[in-house]
Amino acid sequence: MAEEVEETGMCSVVVEAAEYCKTRNDESARKILKADPEIVIVDLEEFDEGVESLQLLNSILPKAWLFVASDSTDPENIIEAMRAGAREFISKPVTAENLSQALTRFRSERKRRGTEVSRGQIYCVTAAKGGAGATSVAINL
Image: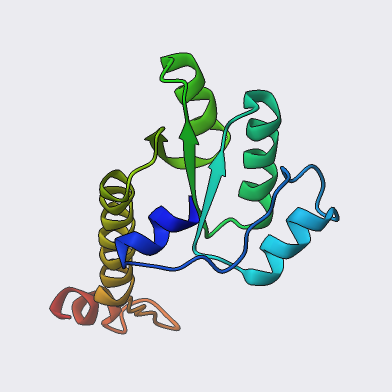
C-alpha cells in the first residue's frame, strides 16, 4: 500500500507496522505513536484484530484520521469499523485514485476545521454591581 500512498503525491509513508496494535506498549503501537501521524491506514485483513487495533489507535492518537482498507464491503463490517474510529473506508484493491479522494476529503476537513477555530472571538462583559451599564455595552458590541 505504500506505493499507492507515494503515487498520490499528496503524502508519504512515515512508518510501517507489520502487525496490528494490541496494547499501548507493543512494538507496532510504539512505532506509530512515536511517528505521531496525521493519517493511519489499517488493513482489515483479519477483521476482529483490525477493529481492536482501530479502537486502540483511536484512543492513543485522537487527532489522527484512521483509514481502513478492506476486501469486505459488508455494511455491518463498515459500520463496526466506523464505530471503532475509522474516518474513511477504502475498498481493496487500493488504488492511488481512491486513496487520493480520501486524502482530499481529509485535507478539506482539516482546512475547514482550522478556519472555524480561528474565525470567532468571545467577549465577556461583566459589572461589579447592577446598573453599571454592562448590558448596554454588551448589546452595542
